[in-house]
Length: 296
Image (cartoon, rainbow, N blue to C red; front, side, top):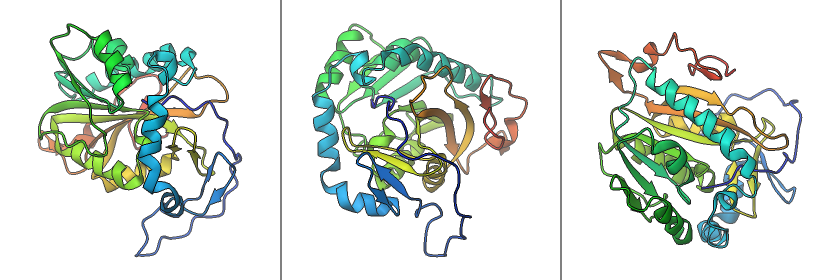
């Protein structure tokens, strides 16, 4: 699991040129500029991936293999974010329960589970059966130690870019601080496979760092990408998903990138003869809003 980024944005400010209409041959948002932590500017994300993709996942694996297998290790030394993170995530799960078409809280998978921090402190008390997927062996070993003897917990060691879950297995898929380690292509590929393995009324929950509007940020130390909200929404759509619910992380330290949680469902999914998106209104939860309203 990727830690919350403690780095302040390399660039700031809200002044931007008016957005141009995308051409028929270019994906909207694909030309969004960004920066790496050396201060280098890239005109678009494709230019960045072309320069780093060959060795990207190997360097991600090396980074995490050398990190301490503890809460502090997976949080990058920002252990003070542990409780606020859990508090917002608990509110989000409660908001999911109050949807008119809530997911069943029977089978969940924690993707990029790390040492089992989120499973142990959040998901274990809410779901009947839990799977943890984590490619880093030292982190997974710590998760297995923490959750030893739990008959309803299963452990899988596999890179998420290669993970192909069985269809119809999960009611909730939890991806926290992990998609930022995937290339755009693998981001869409993973979410597309997750979409296909959802049970009826199931949701995919994505909790991740948000880059400022001025552009995405690449961390070449741990090999991660903090994407803008616009980029997330574009990639969600490419994976055939729509936003059902969203919530902003609260009580967060200053100087740390913003964090947001999204609940996603298949764009073409209908429940009870109507679009699920038609049934979102009336929800009242601090920080939580239907996806077509500005986030509080």
